[in-house]
Length: 92
Image (cartoon, rainbow, N blue to C red; front, side, top):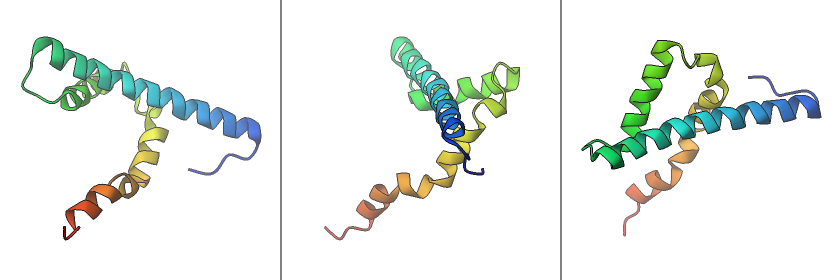
């Protein structure tokens, strides 16, 4: 992923990331709502992942529609787990 060149490109890039984040958040919220409504013994985020898998398999969502955000999250995955990793090694 190359950095955008101008302010207009940066704005378009940010808006694409925001749209992808909204899409993934909506899938997550649908999953958690289904779990709480139907009293399923499965975590809501797992149901959300299954919904996303179904959307990808059916073609309703193309991988290119979520590629940039997923690449960003995977690239910075260690950052998201720094606190959790530190707490597991804390001697207290």
